[in-house]
Image (tube, rainbow, N blue to C red; front, side):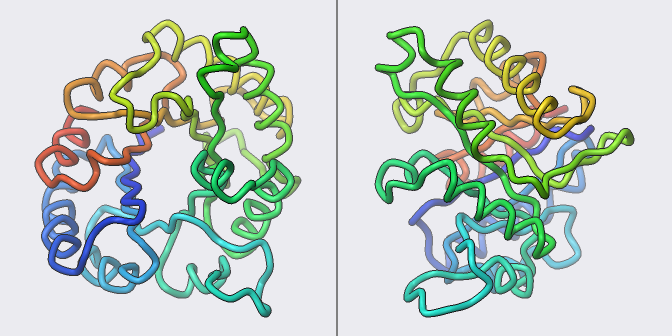
Length: 252
């Protein structure tokens, strides 16, 4: 299974920055066949980034989608719209969506279900707060999120393919520069794989779990060498051309 490197640009970027970064990723992604690369720019830049990635060994992803196919939902976009725009992936349930927009596991599950039915691979995010970790509730919280956020449409096969990806993002590590120890990451990823494989009814090795939270070039190699880590979900570092390309190179 290839290591997946996903760049989540969040609400940053403009056309000039997007063109330079996408062009660089398009040129360099082919140098690292061990890596699957996904760029997730803001919705308004999807079409442009898709054009700049055309023919490259890199995929286009979105940062969120609605759980309905269409309707009077001002400001939202549907999974089918994203598919038509050229997306292959969509992030759902990011901690910033869960906290700022009060998204529940049920809401995330519905979005993931709609993404799968529209032909997209949802990247389903889970993770605990610092308070929950200190209280010894990290696994309890993350396990509940995994069970509540994976839709019935999720499936995996014996040839190491699945129609969904999970991302473990400890909330307290996002943008803070802090990360769990490598042992903590290994323990949580092993736990997530165990819970998810039981939900889906598949072999554990088929479940892909990315790590996200202050990932950068300096720690990417160590993180991706941890057992159970199928790749990384990169935030701020994905906005910097040299930094992000170095993270991709760390897969090798």
